[in-house]
Image (cartoon, rainbow, N blue to C red; front, side, top):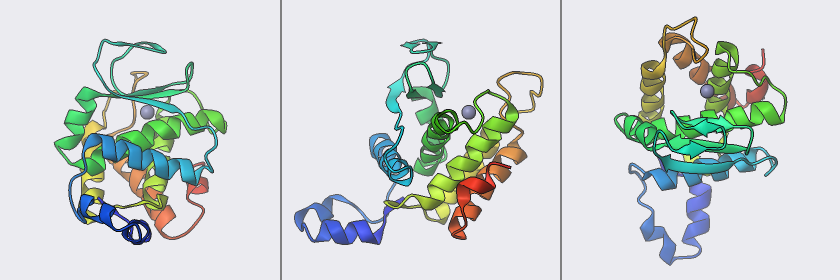
Length: 198
Ligand SMILES: [Zn+2]
């Protein structure tokens, strides 16, 4: 991932900070989470920002009970990102972590804006689509082709065929299609969010 030129120029005008941002590199989890959060906050005009707790262990207590995997908890308006998911994401790369964070942030916005709150495959795929839109629109991070590949391969990996499981998030193919649809609709300069709400 790369910091976009606009921001680099802004940083350059402060001089000394520039050296601390390598142009192309795998970002560390904290940088990914902060960067994605800052970007999505801007997209939503700083409205309704959820809290974030990251690097949590499975089995720890969260606002919605014990934690088994990254999720958004409406009860305390908090996004949880587990250590295990960070590890899995980095088997693909930093882009995959950005996608997890964007997906969970999307769940918070689904509830805030009433897009669809229940955990059905449709709202899961909608969250994937919204995550793609965010990734496409984020003003402060440039996702390169490698990042896009990391996102697609991770989305494919975490797809499942458990149609009757309430935790079913969509098949591998559906998940890739949803996040790619979101990225495409934002990159074309269309109203990206709307294309996820059909
Ligand atoms: Zn989800």
